[in-house]
Amino acid sequence: MATQLVTNLRKEVNVFNFTGVRPETKQKAIEALRARNVRGACSMCGSSNWAVLEIVSPLLQAEDGSTVFGGSTIPMLAIACTACSHIVHFSAVALGLISTTPSTVPPEGESK
Image 1 (cartoon, rainbow, N blue to C red):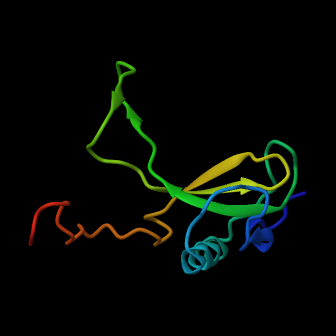
Image 2 (cartoon, rainbow, N blue to C red):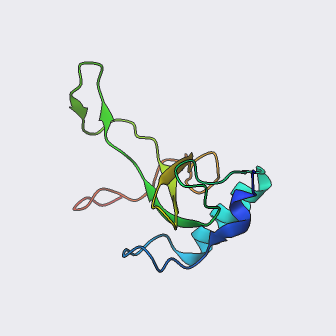
């Protein structure tokens, strides 16, 4: 039985010990997932209770299996099942949580 995923997204995470995203980003993420009619229970345990975690950018691997440092990344919103801790990722750019506009902040030690 499919349940609406975002109906049970929790704004406060008490089963995971980390800082997490800012409350306004968390609310924006929930609204973006609702707007896209994201549905489903956890594929591992069947629970329908989810928590918004972090926006992450994983390291990429080259075709030869080596790790790629620098270059492009794929920022993703991570949400976790509060029952079994299974993590699911969504594009943070597509959800409107990350801007694709280049930053105007200069690197540390440099001025504009």
